[in-house]
Image (cartoon, one colour):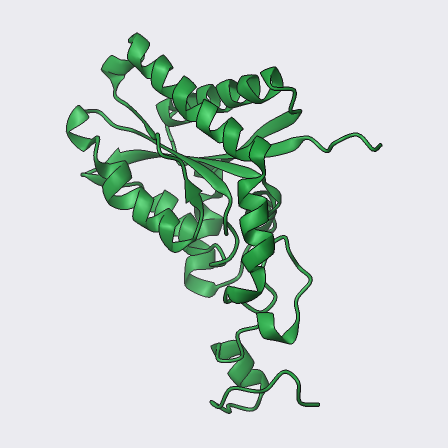
Length: 235
């Protein structure tokens, strides 16, 4: 019997400070998630995509549509992840523009059925609902499996036991979903029913004609500007 591949956790941190409280929160969540998985006998690894160093590439890709090598590598790491920890700072009652710009560059099917643990940091508890108001709808649109428990932290929370308890609860939920293989089974069963972009980054790369979006601008251009939907079964 072959040894099981370690589960891959990838954290996205949109923090830009040095040190960044958002990165510190993402690291703490990732470590607790690894601990929960390893205690259950599930090998796992964790890595972090920091968006700050990618800001210029993200802006360039937003304008031109061309992704630089480092940005493309970060997106491919997300595509290969078994679960995502998404952490953003809150600015002016909203998620980071850097975080949103990065997510805007992801293919719509990149995070299908992947467990996603949502987290945010802010200077005031008044912003505590930003996760539910803005992050959950965003990840629902991407069809990720956002966990029931999210993690929000203000400067006053770092020394409080309640933050640790919330992190532990969220990490436990993530570990249960990963060990059960719920996300992978959902994606495997329903993959053909999702709309996929041509030459996208999603990890289930074996595509049939039924998987492709023949109404996309790129495909219409390839067909000479035709707007009618093509039948994949036709030669």
